[in-house]
Image (cartoon, rainbow, N blue to C red; front, top):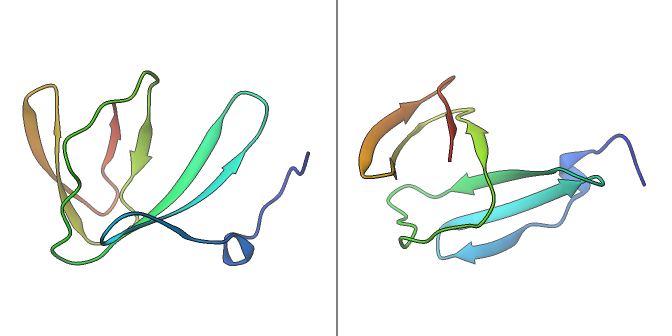
Length: 79
């Protein structure tokens, strides 16, 4: 199992129109790099596991547990 990753070498896959994903994982954790096109909308969905993220650049409106926030660079969240 690798310990270091070069994100530029990881293939992107499209989750839904406007959302691309690159993933890296170990034995108990997975990390995703998600890129979102301007104006793209992710359909409402749920996951059985926790997720966390940090906005690297841009802004994004996220709704969790009925609360909506506009995230900007440096903001973090846990779902």
